[in-house]
Image 1 (cartoon, rainbow, N blue to C red):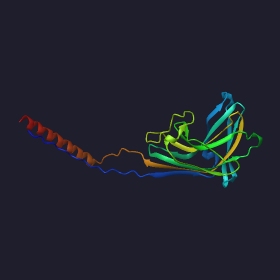
Image 2: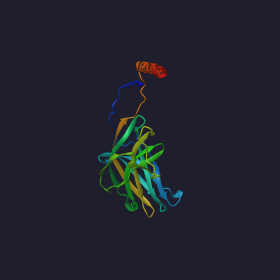
Image 3: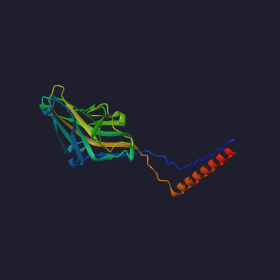
Length: 244
């Protein structure tokens, strides 16, 4: 006996997701617009934790206003990383999945007299679920403004400041991401007092809309119900033919 098979193909429209660039910038650096905290440090003992000072300077930037950071460590402190987050620079990957991001800023090492005995480096930083992540940092130029750029950064380019085996999650399952920059300073022999400045901060993130559950129109549900009835009738017919 020859069996008959019923095949039904249902075609539904699929939207093609376009890439979108979401950008934030700041060249004024009002203190209230930024949050700052120590994201990592190294010291001989906990009581020797380094400290920092940060403020908006209204002149001598590149040009005009810039953000100034002072990092201070005793002879028992070896390094400090200070994270600066622009409060409005936020992307939720559950809405806009991040493919990569570019960051630009101007940076300078400022003279600090006899206390200027350490080093300072800089890098982008992001915060996600209370953890801070960044790429390999870069040295800055003392006494002159220089342009810095980090291009095409993906989640694999960033590691946790306190766990180098952990990366952020840019996918639609990841938590909200905030953007900023980090300044790391120190002295391998202990003891430092460093001044840096940053101006013209820009971040541009390439995103795509996160996958969404789209409710089907009532007419489609009716069509699916009709197809189900057709399948049931067809199966009954096959069963009868098999008995015959």
